[in-house]
Structure formats: C-alpha cells, structure tokens
Length: 253
Length: 253
Ligand SMILES: Nc1ncnc2c1ncn2[C@@H]1O[C@H](COP(=O)(O)OP(=O)(O)OP(=O)(O)O)[C@@H](O)[C@H]1O
Ligand SMILES: [Mg+2]
Image (cartoon, rainbow over all chains, first blue to last red; front, side, top):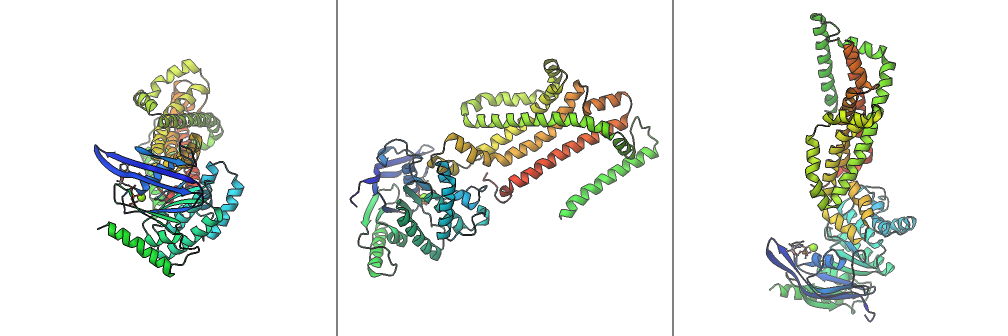
C-alpha cells in the first residue's frame, strides 16, 4: 500500500485505575491503515482490543501516544463509525430505522439512506424484516442490522468490534462474504477486531496480532499473496492461516 | 386468568354497594346522613346537566394543571440530568418542597391568583409536578452507557442525543409519573376549589354539603372518580400505543 494512511495510531498506551490498582492495558501499540484497506487486529480475550477501538473512536484518551484520523489530531468523535461489541439497537426503532440512525444523525438525506438501507438489507438477507422491531429479530439478524447501520454512517473508516462473534460458523462464513462484497463496493477502510484466525486470514489485507494484557503488537502479516476473492480451501490460504495460528499458539507458550 | 382479573374486583364492588344499600334500608339511615347507592345514582342522573357543567370546569383545571405540571416536571428532569451541579444544588429543595403541604398554600394562591382557574390549576400542577420530575429523572439516568457512547461516536449533538436517545429511553418512566400525576391532580383541583371557587365539582360538593344534600355530594364524588379513572385509562391506552416496544424490552436496570 503506497497511499498515505487515513488512520494512524502511534505508540498508544493506556492504564486503567481500578480502585487504586493500576491495570496496564495497552503498551505502545502502533498501527496504521491506508484508504480502502482492511486491517484486522487479533488477540486473546481481555488484552485490550475494545479499549484500542474506543480510543480510536474518541471515547477514551490514551495516556501516551497519539491517534490521527484523516490527518486531524482534534476530537475523533464522529470521525469514524464504531460497531460496538455488544448489542446496541434501539428497541423503539424498526430494523430499517435503526439502520439509518447514524446517517440520520450525520444529517444525510433520509430518502437516500432508506433506499441504500433497503438495498443493503437485501444483500444481508434481511429483506422483509424492514418494519420488524429488534425483539422480533434473531441475534444474528440484529447484528446484521447494526452492520448495515455502520456501513451507512457516511464515514469512510469503520471500526468493527467482533461483529460476527455470536454467530454459528456457517452464517459467519456467509456474512464474511457479504461484508467483503459490501466493503469492496463501498470502498471503506476497515479496522476489524476478531478472535477467529480463519476469519482474519480470509478478510484482511493486513493482520496484527496483539500479546496478552498489556497488549503490544506481537506480529504483523500482509496477505498480498492471497488474491481476492479468496478460497478457504485453497492451499496458499490454508498455509498462511496455519502460519498465523502457529505464531499465536507459540506466543501462548 | 384475565377474566378473573376483571370479575373479582367487579364482584367485590357490587357486594360492597349491596351491603351499603341493605344497611341504609335496614337501619333507616336518613338521606342527609348517608344516602343509599340507588338514591345517589338517581341523583346523579337527575342532576346530570348540573354535574356535567361543574365537571367541565374541574376537568379543565385538571388538564391544565397536568399539562403545566407534566411539562415542568419533564423540563426540570432534563435540566437536572444535564447538570450535576444543578442536581446537587436543587435536590434538597426539591425534596423539602414535598414536605410542605401544597394544600396549606392553596389559600395563599387564591390571594395571589384570584378566584378563577389560576389557583386550582396551580395546586394541580404543583402536586403533579414532583412524581413526573422524579420518575423522568430516574428514567434518564437509566440510559445505558454503551448507547450514550454509540451516539457520541456518531457525533450526535446534545439536542440529537436528547431527542433520539434520552427522551425515548425515559418515556416509560415519564408515563409512570404522568399516571401518578393524573391521580393527584384530581385531588389538587378539588382542594383548590374547596378553598375558594364559584364553580367546579369541589364547589358543588361544599354547597351541597352545607344544604344537607349529601346525595349530591356523593354524585359529585362519583363524577370526580369517573374523571380520575378516565384520565388514568387514557394514559394507559396512549402508553400502550406509544410504548408497545417496551413491553418486550425492559430497559436494563
Ligand atoms: N473503563 C474501564 N475501567 C477499568 N478497566 C477497564 C475499563 N475498560 C476495560 N477495562 C479492562 O481492560 C482490559 C481490556 O479490556 P478490553 O475490553 O479492551 O478487552 P478485549 O480485548 O476487548 O476483550 P474481549 O476480547 O473479551 O472483548 C480488561 O481487563 C478490562 O477489565
Ligand atoms: Mg472486546
């Protein structure tokens, strides 16, 4: 990737103070993503991945280091679209009204947003559920609605915190394909957090593995040698996936 | 199950009324001490136009008081929610204001606002205001932090945050407060009329009492009860329509 990064995290450190006890969570983490790139972060549970995304989104300030989104050092709130790890649909809005929430807040024209949402609902297998309320949808469907909301936010940098975490492997696989289609169609920059090695190798341009808490960047891979669309059963892919797994397991002792 | 929930109270009510009727007849209680229910109902219908005229005045006082008290309570709740300093400064006074009986200042209100609608509306508003403010504030404070964070990452303005997140979240609590306020404002308007009025059901009760027309007093009470119940039922119906989503989704504690 030769284009300048749209997202740059430079030696970011974060320590929480939990009732007087210091908890080091991020230890000089650096990463960058250029326009249209898909960067994935993988790491053990509790290492600080969500904290990293919250810092990039502007919800938290790091104790040291800097985060630059689109060249600006000021407040990052509203500069990226964050898909939180946990369910965040509003129960009083229908699925489609939830999907256009971010674009509504950004002040984008409603009719256009609704049109795009309807199209994305089709792509995400949500057709016919536009007027359903969140409690009428399955967990996987709610997650997809939240994904559509993130894509329609009008932001070009998406921060996805384990968006497919709660799904069964098959739904997960087909949603990965959907995500890739939508991503390449809309030319967004994606920073994905996941636990799943296969997912990481399947969707990313670049992959960063974090160590256990305090998280530091352990290894970084670039998957230039895997042309898209990728196949999960192709040999190079399987070799690369095994490589990543090897390093991650080695890191655990 | 549901049938029993209606049948049992109705049976109990009929039994109590029957007992009252029998007792009045058996002991030949004079009508100026305690009229029989049949006599109350007869009076109710014979003097229906008179009752209706006074009921209109009282209803107007109740509705205006409810509107003022509700709007004031909602406004204060939003104000207290948005400023911790204000909350800390005002909380003791808010509670102290409830220790002070509003009825005691009703005569003062007459002095200040005259004999018209004003003082009755003021009394109704003053006692309806507190439950609305307290309930709504609780509802606002129960907004889940992850939803607030989501709105912040979307770059929501304080106004958008209020309209699209805080207000809908607090709506169920606002309705709880309004239902209590509706009940209290009936009492408030009546007391306001007792202290000084030329029209209204409270005035009618005082007049009839002085003339030993206890049957008319009871008929007025019947009318007041009907107004109170209708208000409560009205709020329940609106609540069910507006908050259909809340039946399936209770906001987290
Ligand atoms: N606001 C906070 N105050 C104190 N400690 C926190 C706070 N947020 C997170 N932590 C702690 O920081 C550590 C990292 O949390 P984080 O949510 O970033 O992990 P994660 O990598 O996203 O985990 P998972 O994969 O399970 O989602 C945890 O030990 C957590 O308890
Ligand atoms: Mg997390």
